[in-house]
Length: 252
Image (cartoon, rainbow, N blue to C red; front, side, top):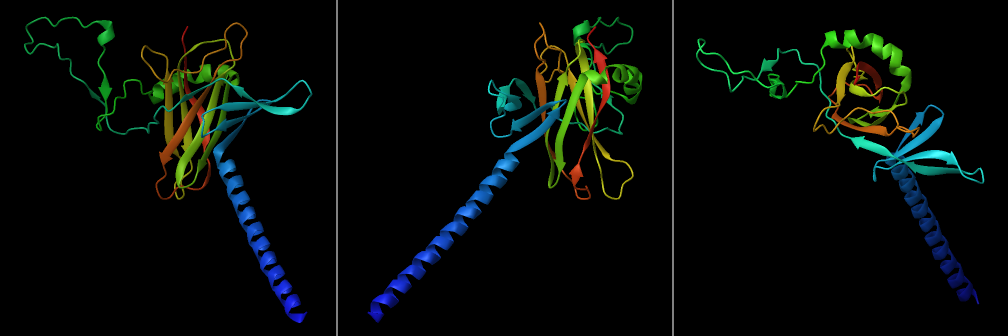
């Protein structure tokens, strides 16, 4: 009798230990799933709308109420772009020479078609033809003040091991844009001025990164979602970056 009781007690101890281990594993797996799910989404607030972006699938969802007044996530149209950021260059730009130019100064040079305008490159070989100057930014300041209330810009970029995340742009006004420049300001430890990263969206033939345009026929304007993934040099502070409209040009 005593032997049976001891065996039964030992078996119960083994089962209890196994249950405890299983419970710990389940909790650990649940915590990992919650962390992975948290890292999967970027959350935005666009006015009164609450949006979330799925970084795995590239889908955007808006929180809405269904017919029964329950809150549900509804997929919305969004255009995702990965236009590269540029940093201000201190070096003078180099103008690409015209291949049709004649060597002799006595001969008349052929007129170049308007579509064959020279491209401008910096000392590192980057094409900066469309790079906006500080003079351009100052000139567009009144247009920005007058129209920026119609441009919704939501920032979800974090500074950690890398500067990464997304930001959302929407043109809720009634004017088409020719060009839009956003400047991301990243705070740097030990420096008075933040580091600048610029994103230019231009409407021109063959472009892959046009600016956000108004909705047509009373439709909701298409949201433009910009992905950000930039190396973060040593010295950057951890936190959130600031995003500002620094250049604006209308199509008309």
